[in-house]
Amino acid sequence: MRRPLVSICMPTFNGRRFIDEALLSALGQEGQDIEVIVSDSGSTDGTLESVRRVAAEHGGAVRVLPGKTPGMVRNWNAAAAEARGDYLKFLFQDDALEAGCVKAMVDLAMRDRRIGLVFCRRKIVVDQSAEGTFVARWYREHEDLTRGLGKLRAVQEGRQLLASRALLDEPLNKIGEPTAVLIRKDAFERAGWFDEGLRQLVDWELWLRLMAGWRVGYIDEALVRFRVHDRQASSVNARTNAAHGEEEEVLRRMCRPGISRWLHPGVKIELRERLLPMGERAPGIGMGARVYSFARSAFRAGKRVSHAVRAPVSNGKV
Image (cartoon, rainbow, N blue to C red; front, side, top):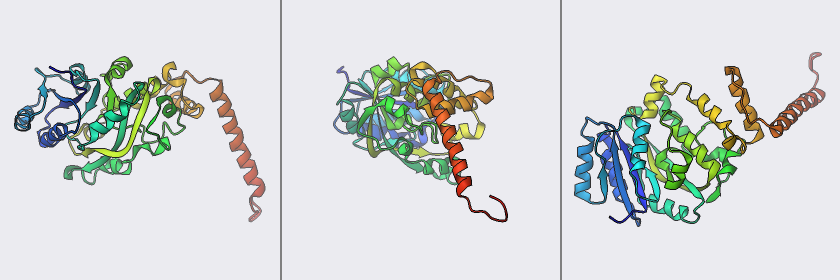
């Protein structure tokens, strides 16, 4: 078989409710040599039967991997392991791609082999089952994830994004979910795959590693639809607190030399402040961060003195 340029990886688990729309959006991509890989975690709701029916009716190169791969993140990696394309395009079972999504992303990625990751804006679609929930409100509020990164170019060094002073501001994941990302496969492999020990922040943690070593492409257009509903992993994890402690774990990893060397001094200080109350000592806090900390403290002290001098006197009090 001819090697495809792009592998669309679709990990599934009991996703029959939305899987037809997701798969049709993958098969309807324009102008690229694409394969679709479906890796299932043991669905019992007819998900794979729907996949096979849609594939038979609409054609396209769809491979359903044999066997079952337990575990959400392990299933993501299983699909990537079978991919034959130069680029990986993840598509979750409840999301969808606009018709020109893959072409636009690949065209940008192929400008420069040093681009390891391309991402785009996403459109939030809230299912009726999630209306009124905290998760739905949060996603609507943060539909545009990139505001904290400033003005993005089509291509920039990933290290420039790591150097943002707003890196740890909400939302932490300023790239987006895997559905909104195209990854160069050799960069994915060299960076170390998705970490199967994480559950909620697993994508953000990989984006950090990719940003430290590769250039990043950005398309300022909503090329994917991200659906919020009551059974998605984010909603379930929020209800069950399943990802408790993960943020602290990822913050600790950010202190490793491969990432911490590129961080803004203020972010290094913030890491230290967040980790120290838990008995941690954040490494990688060098002279630059100490100078920044001193300057920040002096600036704040100066503002207090200046304010006291200028403040009007009222009832004998300053």
